[in-house]
Structures are given as C-alpha cells and as structure tokens.
Image 1 (cartoon, one colour):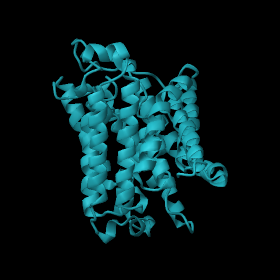
Image 2: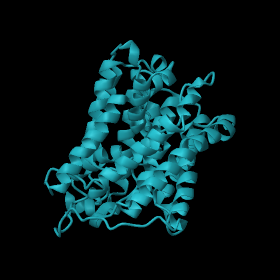
Image 3: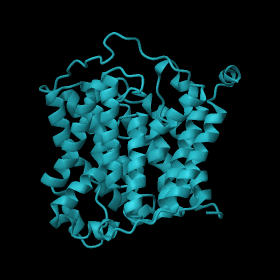
Length: 397
C-alpha cells in the first residue's frame, strides 16, 4: 500500500480518514461541554479588563491561541508548556521529541517564545492597546498579531541575537495592533469580510516592514544557531505512512507561533478541552460550545486534506504550509456562516486545497531578507476572502 501511495504522490488515505474522525470526535466532545464559570465567560471577562492586572495577564496567554480563534487561557498555557516539553526532549535528542520544534532550530525555542511574550506584553502593558476595550462597542483587541508574526520569524532568521530580539519585539509590539485595527475599521468592516483578513494583512504588512528594518539596521547582527543534534543526522521519515500523517496534522495546530510540533499542539488541545470544561462560553469570543467544536472540526479537515494532497512536499525533510487554513479559512467561515458540519467541511476542504499552493506562489516572489511567513499570512488573507465570498453567494450557506 505504501508503494502505491508513493506512486500516486499523495499521503496516507488511512491517515486522512483517521484525522477526519478525530475532528468529528472533538466536535462531539466540545459541543457537549457546558462549563459555566461566570468569571471566565468571555463577555464578563473582557468587561472591565483594563482595571484588572490578573485579567490582562490572562489575556496575554489567551493571545497565544488567538490565531486558532480559541482565545482560551488554558489552551494558551497548554501550547507554551507543551512547547517547552518538546524543546527539552529535542535538546536531549529524545526519540519522543516529535517533529523538531522551530523547524530544526530547537535551541532557538526560548528566544522565539521570549519574543512573543515581550512583543505582546509590551502591546498590552506598556503601549496599552488593551485600553481600546474602553471604546464603546469594542469586544476584542488585536494584541496577538506579533505572536504569529514578525518577532518569532525574525528570531528564526537571525538566531540568538539580542539586538534582533529587542528591536523586533519593541517595534513589533508597537505597530502590529494599530495596523490590524486600521485594516479592520477601514477595509474589512466596510466590505463585510471575515475579521481574520485584517489580522493576517497586518501580519503581512508589519512582517515585511520589520524584516526590512532588520536588514537595514546597522546594529542588528545575526548570531550562530547551536545545532542541538550535536552532529547526529536529521531523522528520515516516511511521509506516506499513516503514523507520520497523523503526527503532521496534529503538528499543524502549533505552526502559527512557529513551533510546528505535535507535543505543543496536544498541550494546546488538552488545554482547550479543560478550558471548555471550566466555561463553555470562554472560548471563541463567547460564541459557544457548538462554534468551538465546528472550528476544531474545520481545522482537522483542512490540515488533513492539505497533508493528503501535498505529502510529497514534505519529503526529504522539506516543509509545506498546510497549516494556512487551520488558522484562517475554516474557523473564520464557521464564525461567519454558522457552527454547522456542512460549513466546517466545505470551508475546511476548500482551505486545505488552496492554502499551501497559494502560500507557495507568494513565497517564490518574496524579496531577499523577508521571512516566508509573509507569504503564508498573505495566503491566509487571499484564501479566506475567496472562500468566504464563494460561500456568501451559495444558497446553501
């Protein structure tokens, strides 16, 4: 079966089926969780958040799962803890480390997380963009942009460089949130498109600007990256096997903050379940358990479809942006068109087909010195717009 799969050029059919079943199981589980902690109800939580430091700290951790549309404090803590576990195992060259966290640059993980915490922390606690909650009618603030944007990407490019770390974190925290807010108010709102498009456009624009600043700043220097493998060869894996397929789909759930590791993803998903058990209306901006279940279903479907179609792109240690629809198309369409299985499946399948190739198209056109994440988030904006407009004019949605 493996040889035939290789000849066909796609991934494991069994893996595709198993991952879709996992998605439906998550949908069933999350839809039927009804935790009722009133303090964590999203509306109650953000009400008066600017007068509560503990809530602002919780908001910082929630930002780590904003790319997935969860905004869940337990899931945010889970992905960070899972990431550190994967990092520790990688540094020991453990067989249980999973995919090398940070794409083989495992020793950079503390720098990546540090840049995310510093840039988002500055946006919340120093630049005080959190005070936008005081504007009447505001129920959400885009302080998370840097966590899936330029700061961690720059650290992967420049290595453990203190000058790069401080420069990109300080500037990223300063410009990312207002850029997203501008796009939301003057572009996405008037056109009635999903709000995620404003966020990923902000990642595109600020990512390009910050990469150019890093390139031009005379005091920003690259630093050598320590090879955690200590001379050991990279692991050769069969990208057509069922086991690899399932691991790859799960790893897509931690790609947005540049971890790309199944242990980090499992930490986030476990945290998500715990968070929903505590309060069913804490996650997904208070949209409710049905929305959370449909979002996770769309994510499993979109990643599974992408990995199935483009498994060959991962061969010989390569990487492909199958995670693109996981943090854009599927969840955005669920929140826009309803928490139903048909919406999750339609958006997930289309997103899985389009996300990787569109990212690849833009990736081949990036100027030198700009990280590939700029192409990925551009793909998120384009694919979400296309799928959302398509669904808008289909009578069945």
